[in-house]
Image (cartoon, rainbow, N blue to C red; front, side, top):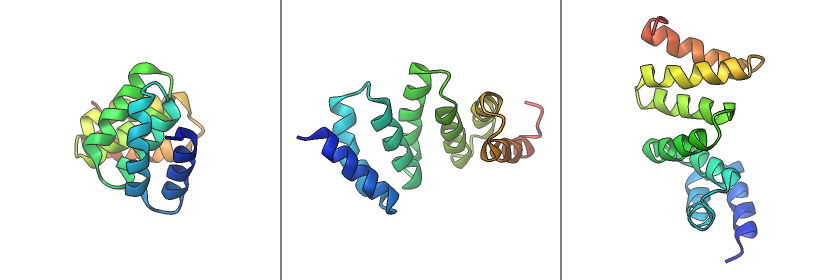
Length: 122
């Protein structure tokens, strides 16, 4: 198995709108290299894009646990929890992401949307 070639193919699948195809290629890569954050992040994004939200959450939590300063992992985890209608849980991660990278409008917008859903005080 050529992991790098498979990763590149998975990236191409993801970028051309086939997140399920990307996930199929990425799963064995993450199994073979569980510490590979880039592969795990792309797998989580592929799961998110293909509405496999529980799987996305599992990998994003792993990324956040390994690197709590990964603002992007916090953001996507927050968005995943939002899509799972777990807004209170999402709020924490969206606040962390927005605090770490305040210049990102997408982070700010997602945070405001979820704060509105939960009343902004939790």
